Length: 197
Ligand code: VGL
Ligand code: ZN
Image (tube, rainbow, N blue to C red):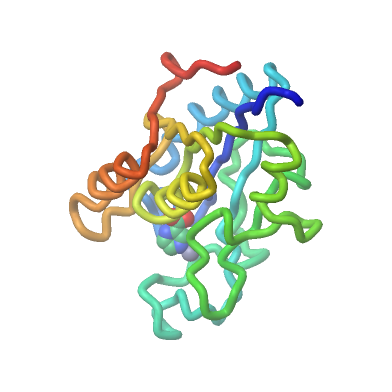
């Protein structure tokens, strides 16, 4: 059997999470050039690259008008739901849509589905991925949930800490999320320290 390989998961690098947009994350757009460099390395090594997108119905219970905590963002098919224009776009088959439910927040990429209806867990098993490297937005929500789910599945998880940013509804949320992920056995790396292979 092949040795379990690494994969890259890019979380929610979408227009609405960038500064000035519906749910702007401070410096959220600054992750884009770094993530593109990570992608280049994974592609060169022949390793899988997945990208999740927040993909809500208009009347999601996730939104303030319908009982949730958030301003309207990343509504399916709207310009705000598009990936950041500078993000190197992947094969459409490797995009995970999540948060599509009317009542669930859908923070984790493991709750989403690919266009063929399969899940990230199924794809990781199929591709023999044992090590998931995670970058994107937002540290304290979708990155956190995706990382914790990956750890529950027993994957090695490496957070690419130079390519994440948090929403910080409350000051310190990202630091608390990092602490929680680290207690769950998260490892960290940067462009300089990441070892693939
Ligand atoms: C996210 C808040 C609301 C995220 C999504 O992608 O982290 N955060 N919806
Ligand atoms: Zn959302």
